[in-house]
Length: 226
Image (cartoon, rainbow, N blue to C red; front, side, top):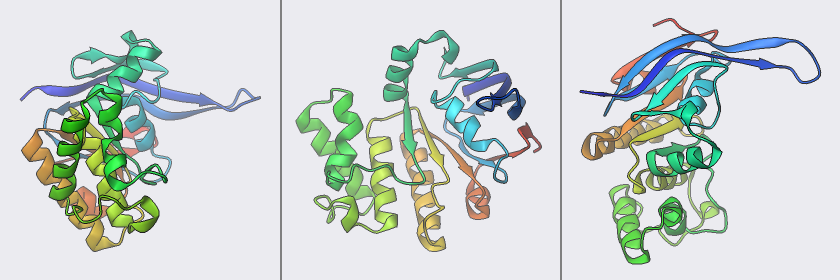
């Protein structure tokens, strides 16, 4: 099985605005993640897991080191090409769902596929199928305010996978959910990853997510400890 992510000697430091004080978020990370894996990046707050997720997702840039995602060296891409890379290759599931409040579940699910230029007929058909697979076929015309937290997170998952990305990144996806809803959602994502061949990577401090992961990467103070 080939690696979808290869990271070599990745470091990220931040300088506080208006001062020379520097803090290290990631410290010399070297890591490979296989295609189709189901990965939890775990660690306490401040360990660097969200920073690592954002760099893999091309939402942030490293201070040093190299990141290769699906054969592409991210540092070789300019801003426009990075945006296109994210659109075509990566799905995101955020802790706060990040759904558009004025759009229905169906419209939110279609949003990334719309940006990709997928035709209306195909987009709507595939969006309905994904929402049905996630048990939301009776909620397609509801807006986020009319959905429970678990239902909103399912819509966010539907939006992420509809565009058929190689990789889905999820930042604390169970943080706002009760334990049963969170467990059910992780199981759904695991099944979908196996069915669709998508690599899932979670940043989490939820032991349940860690236990369900195929691969567990533990971070502490910006270093891999296990």
